[in-house]
Structures are given as C-alpha cells and as structure tokens.
Length: 289
Ligand SMILES: [Zn+2]
Ligand SMILES: [Zn+2]
Ligand SMILES: [Zn+2]
Ligand SMILES: [Zn+2]
Ligand SMILES: [Zn+2]
Image 1 (cartoon, protein in one colour):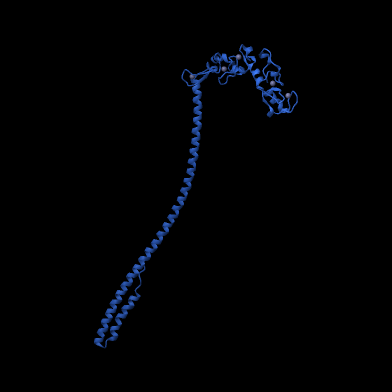
Image 2 (cartoon, rainbow, N blue to C red):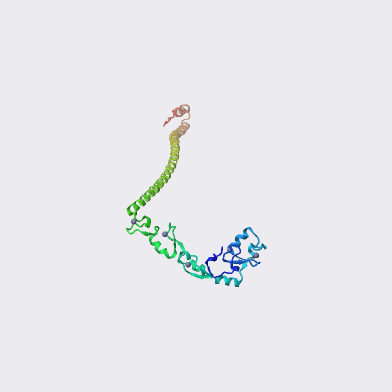
C-alpha cells in the first residue's frame, strides 16, 4: 500500500502513483512496460495474475526492476506530513526521511514495557504512564523480598505472603520426605527378603554339615573299636607266640634229655603236647564297645 496522497504538500505527478492502489508509490518497482507499483501491491497481484494490471502484458516477479533514477529522485523530494499529524505532530519532511522520523516521532504510540500491561501510549507520555502504570513493580520496602505489582500494593502483607510461601515449601518438603521414605522402605524390604533367602540357604548348609559331622563321628567310633580289637588280637597272638616259643624250648630240652636217657621217650613226650592242646582251646576274649 502506498502513501495517502492527502498527506503530501503540493502537486504530485501522476507518474509517481501506484497503478494498483492509486496512492503515492511506497518501495516502488517497475515492469518492463514502465508501469510502476508499490512492491507489496504488485507482489499481491502476481500471486493470481501473470501480467501487468494496466496493459495485460506478460509479467512475473523476476521481471520487476528498480524505478528509474529520475523518478526515485522526484519521489524522495516530495514533502509529506508525519502520519501522527492528527495526534499533534506538526513535522513535515521529505518522503526520503519520513520513515526515520516516524520511528522516533514523539507522537507514535508504543506499548508500555511493564509485563502484563497492554497500554499503548505516545512515546512522549511513556514516563508519565510508567509512574502510574498498574503493572509497575517495586521491591517490598519491609524486607520480605517480594516484588510488588502496583495493583497489589495496598493488599500486600509481608507475613501473609511469607506464610503462603512457607506452607508451599513445607508441603513440598513433606512430599519429598515421603518419597525418600518410600524408596528407603522398598529398598530395605528387598534387602530383608534377600537376607531371609540367604539365611534359609545357610540353615540348609548347616543341617547338611551337621549330618555329615555325625556320619564322620560314627565312622570314627567304628574305626576306634576295630582298632582296639585288632590291638587285643595282636596282644593275644604275641602271648600265644611267647608260650609256643617256651614250649618249643622245653621240647628241645626234653629231647636232649631223652637222648641221654634212651628209654623214657613215651613219658616225656606226653606233657608238652597236652600243654599245646590247652592253649588252642583257651577261649578268645572278645571286647565289645
Ligand atoms: Zn500501490
Ligand atoms: Zn504495463
Ligand atoms: Zn511525527
Ligand atoms: Zn503500563
Ligand atoms: Zn513485604
């Protein structure tokens, strides 16, 4: 959209008007047919059409060129009122400079910078508004540390604010403690279960070892008994051996004596054999443990 022709001082050449909006060219471009347009006007037109709106000659965006230099100069020299004229700005300047002026114009409306405030005020009134803006804030002078919005200023009560905060913190704490407790409990529980399992395993092992132990003990006892019996048998055998030796010795003596006497053979032979019989018959002592 171009500049409203009413804002200009003096005569404006028809050649400086946009062929589409009929206002004074804004960011102008021209077609090969030399018709000139505001950039936004011709871009809008070319979305649906592919020709010049004046003479219908073929046209697309790539064919658009800057305006002739002499026309740009004429355009830039036009004198124009500030768009805030109706609000009181009396500035008139060249079209070339009007954008810069309007960006800084004291009569332009700008948004208040306080968060939450939707007021739009003229730049020159910004300070006055800031002083009364309901969304201005200050730090509480009583030291509670809160930033108070102007709208809440009268109701601000340090103690109530702090109490609310405290309550909030407390409930958060309780939640956290509860969470931690829960986790600890579940961890303990699983450990306890683990321990119980371990304990029963150990108990089984102990039982097993005990029964092994008792088996070993009874084996030991049997072995000891056998050992004792062997020893007694050995002693018995030793005794028998010694008696046999003695018998053998006395037998030799008798034989030698008989050889000397020559006739008493029957008589001397009878005694040692009887003794041998008596040893054989001697009952064996059996030890029972
Ligand atoms: Zn236009
Ligand atoms: Zn044309
Ligand atoms: Zn102005
Ligand atoms: Zn405000
Ligand atoms: Zn306070």
